[in-house]
Image (tube, rainbow, N blue to C red):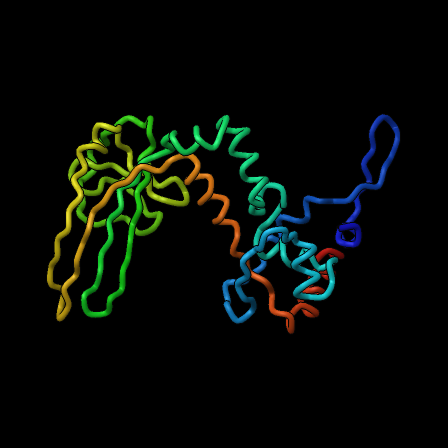
Length: 249
């Protein structure tokens, strides 16, 4: 990664009367705002076992020094933490954190309440999963009206909480809605299937619930890092020039 850091601006750091030229790594976060929302600019790639940013850059762009073009658009700051672990690395992580694979598989990390709807005309299925932390007690929020509408975004009422259905309380944690229930309330959730007519279609709604063990939780978290966006080859020369210009400002 030596040439990569050569592009960064330099600072003079003085300590105890001695001045040293250092690399200004704080420039990096601004570059993480690169706009790749336009799917025509990139394609999706699933990280394979043994892949590193350098290996992918070498395979796709023919230049391992373009590893930054793999990392920055995907907001990868530290490959040790933002990159999916290889299988053996993952097993070692599980063993170190939970004592053994068996312990991770037998320990409940959280519960989930899942509500799915299926459009009988189009076949389209939508699903909302609400996480129920194992140790979170049920909380009530006064002076907030109940609503039968499921939350679909990070809108909220009052202090960031929102009631959904009578007796259920959800909190938006920045990425998902978390259902604040104790295990007692979780056990009271009854799976069901119902349907109703919407226009010319019949929509089926199903409620299920399930426990999620620690191994499955960690595995899903690790796998969520596997699909990344790669800037298309034909654009990389322009992106490289813009990157160098930004760093030289």
